[in-house]
Amino acid sequence: MEQNFGMSVSYLGELRCEGLHVKSGKTVLTDAPLDNNGKAEAFSPSDLLCTSLAACMMTIMGISAESKGIQLGLMKAGIVKTMASDPRRIIEIKIEMRIEDPGYSEKEMDILKRAALTCPVAKSLNPEIIQYVNFTFEKKQS
Image (cartoon, rainbow, N blue to C red; front, side, top):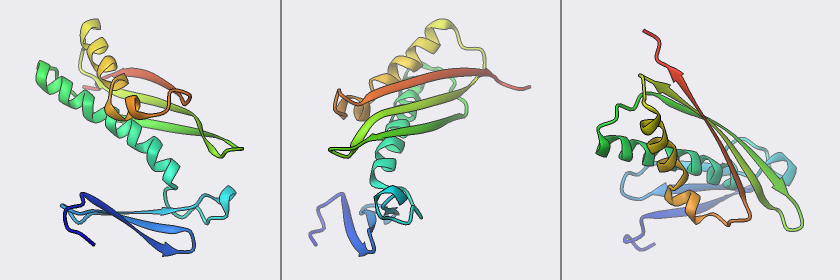
């Protein structure tokens, strides 16, 4: 395969694939979900899409915080994906974003939220997919 690709994917059989990030050599496995003939022993491709959305939001929040001198603490996101059939597709992604709050002002919280909601993955998804994101800023424990 050509070396100028940034990523590649190989089908391993039994509804499993391995994605390769060419530059780093890092890999990720996918498996079909139980309700679609798989074993659910790894992320499904649609799981990765939802995970990519949350990771993109966090990354853009980090970039925005860094550029504006905002201290950004730990973040975690819980994700729920809702599928539809006929055709099988994602119809809703719910993300519960928890952000460690060292004492943000309302303006800083708005900057972080806006950054997340305008990330490239969010803007690339079909507008028919409902993206529900709830932000919880939790006071940092001293």
